[in-house]
Length: 298
Image 1 (cartoon, rainbow, N blue to C red):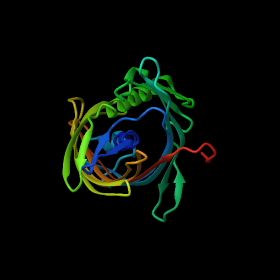
Image 2: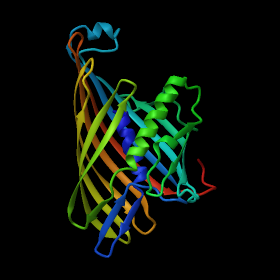
Image 3: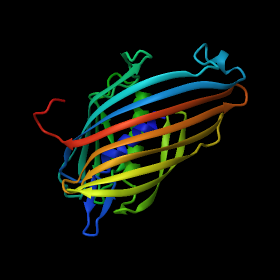
């Protein structure tokens, strides 16, 4: 689930171009141009539940971690990432660097008190570098990660694989044109790794509607649903997901200013011997992008 939420973050980062035509049509290009430097900040608030639906031994095997009653977590995650690109080189590629300036996750209890959650992977201080070709696509084999703290080699390899795959997929999404007052459908296919267990094929069905362009700012509404295809394996998985949101683009500065999305997801895992569990996530994400200023605090 978090991988998919994480994908929305990266998708927002790379949907950085909104080009206004004379016909009040804008073009969404899932690319990032050379010689850019900006900050992306996001806050994701989610309520997650984990519940055993059918017990055939799964509770005993979990050693007390699972019950027939839902276990609920209320989490708030904040991210701050700097994204900058260099000039076009002789081979027509240009460099990209993502610097993870901040990432904190808090657990809220019923009284509203926040407790900092220690993450298995500390991404603060992590850097991702890559090369972008003349078409604006990230070259998967060029993605390199550095700055991960005390990460076991096998986990570092997994992070590298997920980052490379996700970033290259996003910049391969086809350009989309949307016109004022009209709904425009969009289909995006993704492969989302769920840890090191399995890779899920996700089909996103998105309806985009350009509501207005005011002083160069394009306001777009979105509704979307998600289909999940899970390969055959030791367990059966049934998944559903949908959501809606709003986005603002500065068509003059070509900066994706702001977005707010609400997403609902459910996944049910079942094994013949142990039973069936359900994981539900309801999340709200708020995201903003603005130019990087050298003297601003990290």
